[in-house]
Length: 292
Image (cartoon, rainbow, N blue to C red; front, side, top):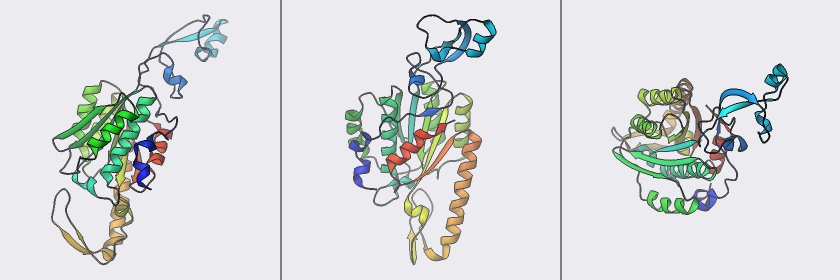
């Protein structure tokens, strides 16, 4: 991965990506999301006789056969999908060389917001660290993202986070339904965080979590004595990296399994990523998935 992969220009290469959802939240123009490949175009109300100009896809052939007349489904118009991206900016997100997890994460956030905005959906980006909050709503496309980048470059990863509180706030501010994408290393993800995602799913939201780690956190290819400085809490520790590597990788595998289990229980889609993955490839993978 090169620096160009995290540029604004790289966003223009995302192509015609769309977020796939099983049950559309809302669509501003009747049939808009259906035309874009996101599923049905509304909530079923009743059957009625076909009228000139009705879209052929609305014809219910089973009802037509039963009534010996062409019948169509009357659907309640939907509104556009509201997409919120929450990026964790806690102290642990500072790790990663040459690209920190935080910088990688907020670029993914920019990309997800751009995908939503350019396809007619609502798009908001939220960065969270402690009591601090950076939030914007995308309206003007790439030009606006370029201005955001200058602001985001000055945000440092620090402190601890209240991911569950941020999730609740986003859910309350955006209404009953939407798509929430959380980008975090999940080191601060507690029971309340996963319960919060589950509650959003029960309210009709779609939830995706990108668990982002640095390459060195995944591979642990250190040698000799290594001093680990605390990022969020605790004391510094010097260890023989090779002596603990097997135990560390076992614990990482356990953490991966726990994240998968908790995400499944919450009804959220989980994507494991690392900061040397192609960010465009991660966004493509996220948009290819049928989000629950």
